[in-house]
Length: 264
Ligand SMILES: [Zn+2]
Ligand SMILES: [Zn+2]
Image (tube, rainbow, N blue to C red; front, top):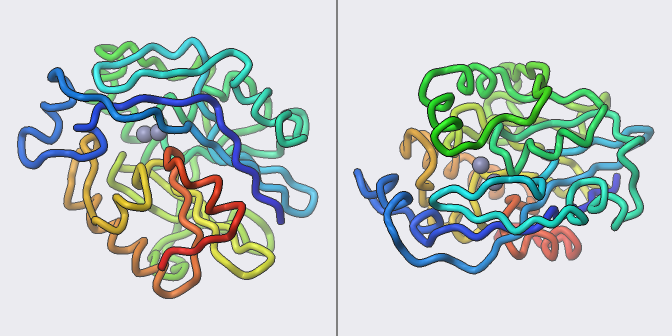
């Protein structure tokens, strides 16, 4: 198995996004003037396993519009086809795409992909409800054109500390697990690598490893309690199995993948 970090540009977010306040300030601060953090990478991931090439997320595109708490820095030549070519891969060889959640910096790159995509049934149900529909309109963040991922349903099959999961490969070395919080239907993908480490492609379960250790819910998720419960579950999993934890926007994720650095 080979796992590649793909980077499709960067995003700058407000500090209040990374270090969320409490109570009403948690989401309000996102829309008020405030300091901005340094740019963070926008990663997605390619997994070569047997005959298959799986993508986990598809990154952002240059046309993405900024929002009150995020500014996208993506050039055309940083979009998915170029990010894949940079590691010697071709979009034509992709067998399937798994989306961790519906946000544009994870799903917009789907415009480049012909292979089928899947997203969790819970996330598909969530994006059809009125509030996220309204937010997409207010923030001018439409779903990518032709967006129609198939539904992926996890079942009551525990995987490590996660009570529900779904194998994504026949040998069950690639597994989807539920990580709700950032969005209600957010999932992560865990790969059991050739050294039997678990490589967790964590999407936006947290922005950084530091946020995981701090057990700090983010500013975006609808229910901080759900988010904190997920962070506890991820930490419990990391305590059971050596796990390389790779959030999409952590500046250290690519290095931790390359060096096989597990959560301690
Ligand atoms: Zn997100
Ligand atoms: Zn993101």
